[in-house]
Length: 106
Image (cartoon, rainbow, N blue to C red; front, side, top):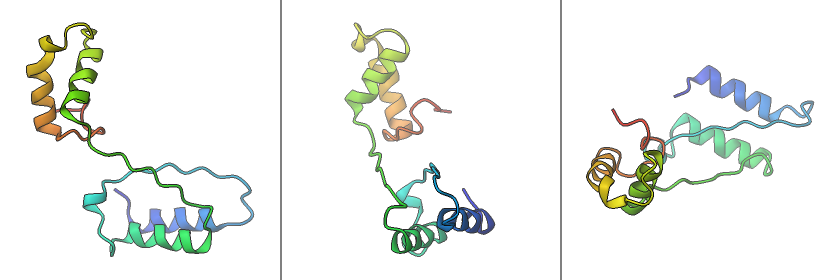
């Protein structure tokens, strides 16, 4: 999450032409940020004022088979994906394949 002051600070830093090189990496869940959300407004404003300022990389949810492969790899059972199928199915069910959550399942 970010508050208004943080978003304003990031916007001001990003638009400051006296800073020659800057990299800011952020992440958010698209389904939680509407077009009228302050973050979306700031991103649009940056894009309008500095077209080179924003690069967006969308991370889609992982498929059940990819989650199974990842779980098998983490458990060092790449050669036995059937052995982790039940656990992988549970991880997928709890996370819906969200890559940010797959390894932080409560």
